[in-house]
Every structure is written in structure tokens, then in C-alpha cells.
Amino acid sequence: MIDFTGENVMLVGALLLFVAVVAGKVAYRFGTPALLLFLGVGMLFGLDFISYRSVDMTQFIGMVALCIILFTGGMDTKFSEVRPIIAPGAVLATVGVALTALILATFIWAVCPLLGIDLPFVLALLLASTMASTDSASVFSILRSKKTGLRQNLRPLLELESGSNDPVAYMMTVLLIGIATPGAGGMGLGSGLLFFLVQMLVGALSGYLIGRLGVWTINRIALDNHSLYSVLLLAFIFFSFAFTDLLRGNGYLAVYISGLVVGNHKLVQKRTLTIFFDGFTWLVQIVMFLTLGLFVNSDELLHRDVLLLSAAVGTFLIFVARPAAVFLALAPFRRFTARARLYVSWVGLRGAVPILFATYPLMAGVDHADLLFNVAFLCTILSLLIQGTTVSGMANLLGLSFPEREAAFRVDMHDDMTSGLTEVEVNESMIVAGNTLQSIALPENTLVMMICRDGSYFVPQGKTELRVGDKLLVISDRGDELAATYKGMGIDEVMELQ
Image 1 (tube, rainbow, N blue to C red):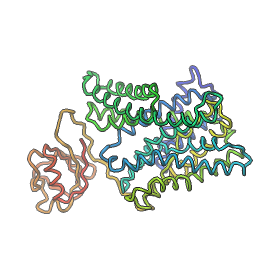
Image 2: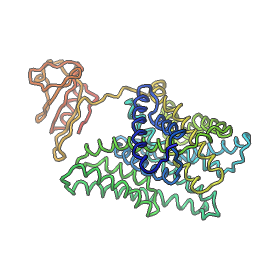
Image 3: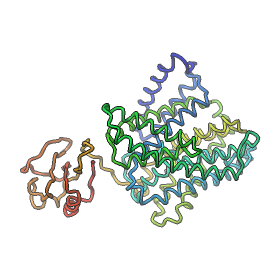
Image 4: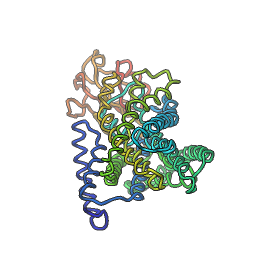
């Protein structure tokens, strides 16, 4: 066994990252969630090669990684897409989590005696609470890597829910740990409810204000070295979490809201920041899943009681608790069809967050803490295996998916430029009056800069003949007039690149 200390850290870390990246490529090819293989790589190395069992370090790595993941998820979420589904998303992230925990806890409490396990209801509810939220890392990575569009605004709904429901599960976990350990200074039910309200209000307000402060600072600091903007924004992420936590607010909620604020405002070097945090998010996800894989004790997972309880709990969570909670939470919202509600129920993926939250009972010395952790770990694997591998397949089966066209052009414009860049695909109606570029009536101050045809790019002239399927990169100072022109040409799909 290699000790996870000293000079071996860099060698082992480099080897783990290399193997994890290769595993991620294999996962993408075969339609398996990459995060599941990252977890498997950690478990494999933990069997024979690496000795690692630090709860403190695991929690710290998970906390840092979750901050980056939530912030990037918020930053990549367009508020214009989220606005129509804020209400159902908020209900799923709060009421949905509570209902999932309550339904699942009732089942755990009822089934444990049948397996010869004496588990009080408060501990059953604690276990259910650690697994009650969908995991943002899993949802964000799988939905975006599949490049599958979802009808009925389901994609922003799922991303909003997964990005904002971790704080509720976290607060329920902390509250129940306090109730389960009253002799260790734990809180009662009344103080716990007050704690919940304070955490939500302070977290939301702090996240919004720090996000606005981050936007104001980045746009005015005028750094000569543009690489430092990423460092500055990274500092705001950690400040948002730590300062909010200092004020007794929920740091995870603050980080997610800060990301929403930053991502939906005009920002200096925004494309550079987006590219940096996309890669950095993948790095922290890999590190977090590898760490959790290393942390688990594989021998404990194979105990009969653990395997049976995990199989029962995981199956009930996927097929009963999550669907029941979703259908109840979305009952007031008539806009979603039964198929949409069923899909939302199915994409309730569990990932690193339940495993991370399950380390809190270990830290607090709660009774049966090892059992709670092992069950949460195995249920996560079950969720990723069953649900994670069928995200696209279920959408196709329910008739909710459509092919999401990827932009043919990637352009980075100076922040002071006000012109708009759009990408459109040539259709039959566009060239009905003539198939040359000069035959198309475009508004003034509008120019077709480049054409993409069958993967080849070239700069057009007025006499250039257009073909159906060509992608046009168009720049214009007349955004409204151009939009009306597109509509008159029968172009429904317009990609805004800037």
C-alpha cells in the first residue's frame, strides 16, 4: 500500500488524473457516466495501492469542489431560460427534497427491522436527507455532454433544481445530526427551523450581493494580465462561500446565486473566464470523485446487511420516492405533461453530494454512521448505473428529445463592441428569390462574414452561391430588424453567438 502523503502525492495524483481522463473518454464512447468511472478508479486504487481514510480532507476537497461546480453551473445558466420555470424549479428544490426525504425515510424505517437492523426513525430520516437532493455535478455533466435538447423547458428546470437543491439537503442533514446527538450540543426542532430560515435568507441575499460586487470589480479593475481575471473570480467564489457561512447563511446557495448573477451580466473577458472554469470544473469533479472512491472501505460495502439495505433503498428511491415527490411537487403546475413529469422523476441522479453529506454523521460520531455512509455510497452507484446511462434513452422513449445543433462558429468579440453575432442555416425559402448572397435582402449595417459548408470555412462575396444547409455567420447593428428578416425567411432557429 502507498501512503497518501509526502513525496508520493504528486506521482499518485498525476497517475490518478491520467487514468481518470482515459476512463472518461471510454465512458463517453460507451454512454456511461464519466463520473461513475472516476469513482471506480478511486475505489480500484484504494483496494491495493493507496491508504487513505481522512474524513477531514475528504470533506474539505468536497466542499471546494462543490463550490466550483455550483458556481460554474449557475454561471452557465441563462436567466432568460430559467425565468419561465423559476416557480416549479424552486418547489422541486425545496418541497421536492423534503418530500423525497420523508417518503424514503418511512420506507427505510419500515424495512430495516426485516433485515435485522435497529435504526431509529431520526437516523432513517438522516440517511434519506443525505440522498434527497439530485447531484448538480452529475446532472450538469451528463446533460451537457449528451448535447440532446429537451422539450417543455426541461433542461433548465433540471439544471435549476440540481444546482439549488443541495442547500436544502445540507441543512436537513445538519439539523438531523443535531437532533440525533442532543448530548453533544445539538439543536432542537425549533432552533433547527430557525436555522433553516436564516440559512436560506442570508445565503440568497449574500450570494446576490457578492455576485454583483464581483461583476462590478471585474469590469472596473482593468488588469493588464488577463489571466488574473480567472484568479480574481475564483477568489470571489471562495469568499462568497466562506463569508456567507460566517454570517450563518448557506454558503452553497450563496455560491450558486453568485454564479447566476455573474453569468447573466456583461463581463470583461467573459469567454476566457467561461473556458477556464469549464476545464477547472472537470478537474475538481475528477478529484472529488477520485477522493470519495479512495475514502470508501470496500470490505464494508460487501457486508450482507449493507448490500441488501442499499439495494432496497436505491430501488425504492429511483422507482417510488423520487417519482412520488416530483408528481406531488409539480401538481400545481399544469404546463408539464405526464411524460415530462416522468422524465424529471427519472433524471433524479445521485452523485458525489450524497456521499459527501454522508461523511457528516461520521464526523459527528452519530450511531450507525458507517452504515449510513456505505448505503449512501452504494445507492449513488446504483443511481448512476441505472439512471445515468439512460438519460438520453429515456428522453427519446418519452418523445421529449430533439437534436441540439452545435454552433459552427466560435467567436470572441471585444467587450466594448455592440454589434450582434448570429448563426443561421440556409433553407429553401431564403434562396427562393435567388441563390447568390447578393440576392438576399438584409438590413443595413449587416454583413455575412463567413460561410461554413460541409466543415469547410470561407469568406463569401456577393456573387457567392448559397446552398441549403450552409451555415452563415452574420454580424449586424440592427438586431431587431435582422430578427424580423429571419422570421420572414422562415428561419426559426437563430443562434446568438455574442
